[in-house]
Length: 253
Image (cartoon, rainbow, N blue to C red):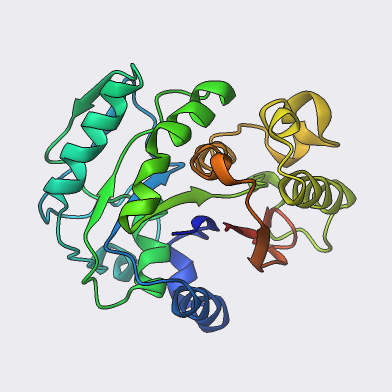
């Protein structure tokens, strides 16, 4: 099974038919997963924490949006068997874990899934990022890598650039293009050292990611893909909100 990292937009992505269609086409080209293991930029909790293993309400972790966005539903089945397997893999790799059985999917998780698996029939388990240490995130992905052979889609959701200060400003800033091109090159070469040290090596890293929780899930995805020198492709590219965000999404394998 490939590993993916999707630029997840925001709740307003649900009103963008072109982007929704791109995500749907991507899903159609992927093997049908038995389950999705989701790592979103919007859940950081130590130790690595497993969310709900049954269908519970979504987490509307955004504020000031029109009411219709708080009416979105995505009643995907829980994945208790996957949760047990994840706990076992984490234990084998000395990664501490915890459970939060009432924690539903946040918008970083459900927004791309609404587009990619709109019937909500694929079981989903979300796990937290245990902080933002790049090597720890990569190793978390590596611990989860065996799930790929079991039909599980390891799915990172975030943004390779994320700077709200530039949203709606006219024109795509040079720093956005520079960082996006650097990230595409590092990902294509699967340069793990560069990706983990992006804050020092990437051009305009501070402008592209004033805070970098949105970049972090791609490190988990890369870790999950690391065992087989994967071919990297970019099913979706371009910019959003005048360059504040890159839409570049990644498929390993």
